[in-house]
Image (cartoon, rainbow, N blue to C red; front, side):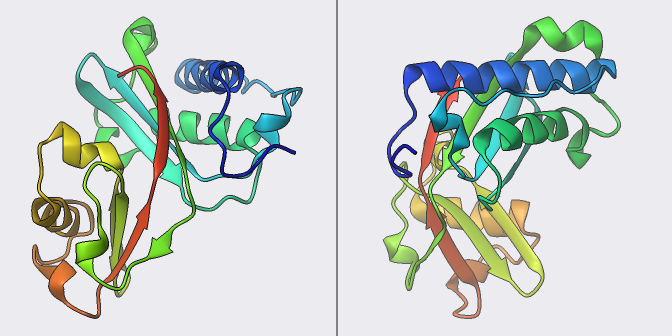
Length: 189
């Protein structure tokens, strides 16, 4: 079994992207979901991940899981298909079969979540965040801050307001939990 904290090899990344592309195609066209053969031991790793789908620069789906309870070879197709068909932001405008050649896929393999004791511990460009208060929660991948040129305060404010449905300054409340994680991102940008 490979080191849980080591980045994936180029070969493993290619296999992961192939699994994701096949799953997106099957989900959008209604074909039977392909069954992955785990021949590369790196695909046996149990790590959380997000799958982001874009058509050009337009987001078309993004879902994932922080839990690492099944191998990447099973989680990648599950999250890729879910991103293509179950992201509620696109229920009224789903990905169509004609759109498939233009869909780019980005995979973000996650480190475990780590609770921070202060918002000052969030490192923009390095950390993704999950904010939680009561039953509400939201998360942003690390690249959200850098792609949008956000400061730490803007990153936390936007996640609270736009993803978790909390007050914009909820991250300042000691009752709001802030977790950080890192991400190994690869695929189409």
